[in-house]
Image (cartoon, rainbow, N blue to C red; front, side, top):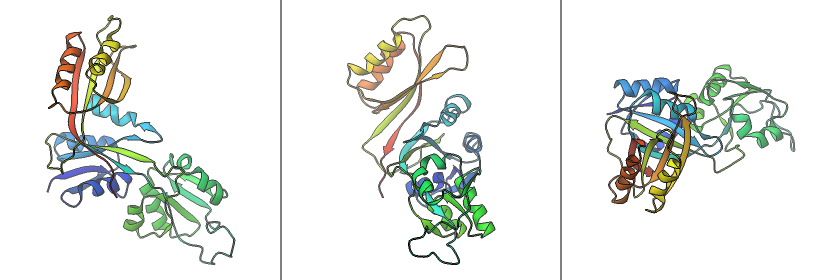
Amino acid sequence: MKKVAILGPSTFSEEATRHFLGNDFTYVSYKLISEVFNATSSGETELGVIPIENTLEGSVHLHVDWLVHEVDLPIRAEWVFPIDMNLIGYANPAGTPDGANPYGHIRKVLSHHVVPAQCSRFMKQYLSEAEFEQVSSTAEGVRLVSTLQDPSVAAIGTAIASTNYGVPMLQREIQDHKDNMTRFLLVGAEAPELKSSEDMKTTILVTLPEDFPGALHQVLSAFAWRRINLSKIESKPTKKKLGTYYFYIDIAGSLDSVLLPSALQEIEAIGCQVRILGCYPSYSYTS
């Protein structure tokens, strides 16, 4: 079976990847995103999974930079997955009196630093007296709770971490926004066999020619008059010269279409550099 590098174990990346790819792949966990990229780039694994964008946080800029500047790994697929935060720990051994806070016995909460902002309402209502302690990942918080086995210490993390580390789920889906989704990219040198999708995307980088007034307008016009939908466009520094930028563009469409290749040729004709990061199927979440 092909190996897939993921951030893990017991993270949202693992949960999302297992949901998408199932049991036809071997999952290899790494603690850092740089290790995921390097393992896939070196051939240690055939594929890698990259969290690239979140409903609340937007683009994950570090991961985009790795994809653009550090490795040459084509995008092979994308999918979205809901990010459900869960309170994981042990119930009050003394029980909870009627009407009392069922989580009032918790004095410390362990999780990743982004969690308090995403679970502020629940934490204010039920965990206002608890100290929050930052750890390297949501999965690490659950692992520590499993080691301590102290009811006064809980974690906020994934359902898969609760299962893998054998720590009970005290409350599911405690995040403020129930529609919080993360977009994941599957990258690798070779395209894997995947289920078919009617939705295709193409991701490109466009670097404008210097001293060309109106170049960005012409780039956008090449797509606009052909009625090609750009689902995302971001400017990012080239890291070569101060004040120079490239544009990271997601396009709803395939390079196999009639109009998209001609749009790219028009852009190149005005002196723009175009780099294709991938043409790939896009999958929506299905429970």
